[in-house]
Length: 448
Ligand code: G2I
Image 1 (cartoon, rainbow, N blue to C red):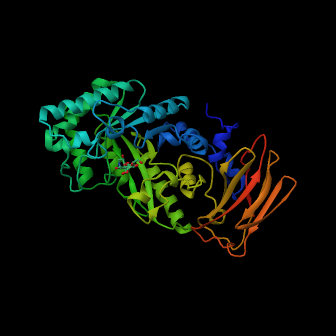
Image 2 (cartoon, rainbow, N blue to C red):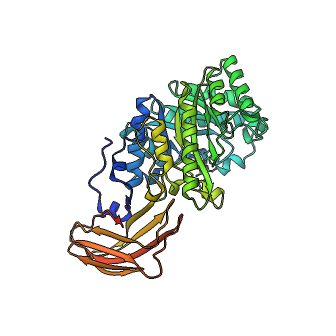
Image 3 (cartoon, rainbow, N blue to C red):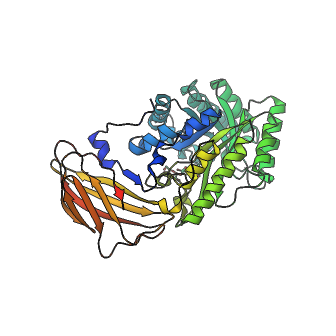
């Protein structure tokens, strides 16, 4: 099921990116993270966007991870935008993909203060109505996927930073008991799913995590169904809390599982080799904190590629928070995760950090337009040459922003006088037109 796709449809080719590392070829043969994690009995998951699960994105999601979390698709506002009218398409697609790839699914999320439909947030409800709405929503959504999801983030982000309850639709209407009610409803709807409370800024020991700790202790004492605590871990470069392992352990000692549910580590852009090296160390520190506690079931990253991360939209000027760059090249953080899981790889040196990505931007009956983007992160170029072999008789007819020649099937393009420099954290793109017939497969580009 998880073998690399070898045959790509024409449509897929149009959007497919072929990315080549200038690093040694050995990197391509690394053991996937999911296999390393499975050998340790751990989850290595990623949040995904359902509509992107094809091509390179789908290949990596299926190959490297043994668990998926829908980034947005299962939120109330996504599944019931209008009262009584449901849209399960993206959520179903993710669950189907996961099952086809032997992956767990973490349902996210049932009761939250964000991304609710406006009919719900703008309504005026009595406590009894609100309770009914919440319980019905849980029964419906958890029931729909009964037996298919490993885990649910039942309640998301119930606390403020000082450890008091967040004033939300739920807390204001139902008091703190909404949490116990929600967990009880979820258990009834799918007795086999593990039920979690999930929050951010609770990775280390602090006022907020202590409030969560006290809540979980009291729920356990009262016999409310609670199986685990999710530590989101939206972290800042160089700021992994030193008490993370201790914090995970104290939750485990309450008799619940712990999961790192939304790991990303953001930095001020542009990235450079020092930042990426620090980020790799930070990823490894989080992995090791989890791996040190047997009840820490594993780690999920909040998007595996920088092209599918919430950070740049929410924190302007920041990003590069995930283990793969925007062109799907693994970053030092990827190798750090692999190493922490017992993979025998070493982080490629920074000089390996320029990549060339070929894409077909449009295609018609006899012709096509393509481009190659050369991007550096952790290295810089003062001149470049990109070459590839057309595998299906394609012919180059015109190029811009580069000087290109074709000899036989081999195309060689070197920089124009004005774009030889690719700075660390920067990129250069050149374009071309070509002709094709029969097929137009995406070639592998070698950067020299
Ligand atoms: O905010 C980061 C995460 C914090 N913990 C709970 C997670 O559920 C949350 O995820 C993010 C998604 O990754 C974003 O993709 O939640 C955001 C909303 O709070 C999501 O952002 C929303 C944008 O605000 C919308 O404008 C956009 O239409 O994503 C939507 C879908 O792309």
